[in-house]
Length: 515
Image 1 (cartoon, rainbow, N blue to C red):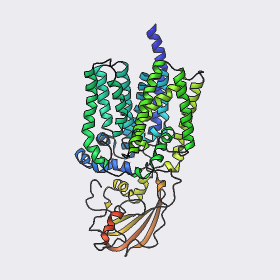
Image 2: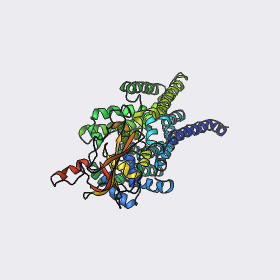
Image 3: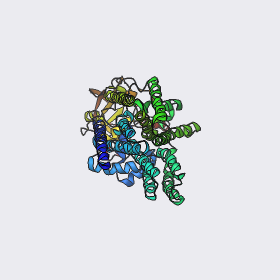
Image 4: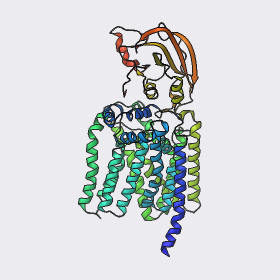
């Protein structure tokens, strides 16, 4: 009789979780290949084109994360292709798989009702959806840290050597995906280490596995930390305030309104109070543990950044979203009267869905359609150069889509055609900090008032995807150099090449495998 009752209760839960996961898949795979790669994604696409050994050799100079994602992506694109749909589908699948594991983690920590609400919150979170559609390691980071949270909850519920070993193994995998996983793994390790229900030897062995993983990555992390990161130019206070904004609403409006973010935090705090007053004691404790892990994963990097080691931005701490969602969901599930919890949860989910659906119409949250631009820039066989009037970062993106085109060499190149690429109009207002590839952060650019180099005359102009391609031709080959005005300069003037590197691209016989 009891078993039949359990099945009757479990069937609706399974049906609900299946429906939520299906919605998550639709949101993450919808229009997955529509937008072009941006700079970081183009870097990923470059890295997975060669052999694993070549890519590992380039990693310290091109990336700021551990190698696991790139090794997985290397194998993935051999099966599904390295176009937008093929490469991004790895992140999309990880984003979908996060939903049932978020349910499992919340089920262990805060009970069945909170688990379903957690799955729903994770399903429609705009921030998680965005990175589930990006060819980077962040969605995989969320997935592995969520699995780690579930294994931590299982080990906490019934600590055994096998469960501790499973948690340690997955935590190490998460660390090999992104360094910021350490801020989620460490509080879990501390709580398990303090649990005296298991032999000290088993507890020390599990934490030793994680410590070995940290030590193995230390050298690479130190080498990569020497680089300067673009987000360091943004004030630390701005980046700290963006964390709750983006966690709640993603990048699209009204995420840019601080009032919205603060109002959302106030609403969520209300449910935390409800959690503390009305929920089951065991579930409440588990939810508070999850919330504590999430807060540590945000606050510790903030304190480290304030101390001078500044690697803080919202996407690096994205792993905290799921444990914080467990805390919020537990408050929603515990609310009384009965109508309050479902009503509040429904409103929260409805707002999230509305923001997700608004993203395609938000000019500040669009990646550039580089596929259309590079199709218009197709190589006709004539020796040509491409002059970029926008950021030099365009060169890496174009270098992926036009694999035989890259930076000009110091000795120059004989060409008969110059294609000048420029933005024709602004794509709309940009948020304060743009790092996700929105085209709104550059342009528009006026046409050149004269020929970019002596001997070339204007031939035609094409417009595509908000860009213009102005074509200049010459009746005979002319050698171009990468320094304006693209002629041979004196030795003193050659120092300008670093400032303009990447602005002039050519199509050599043998392009370098990685810029």
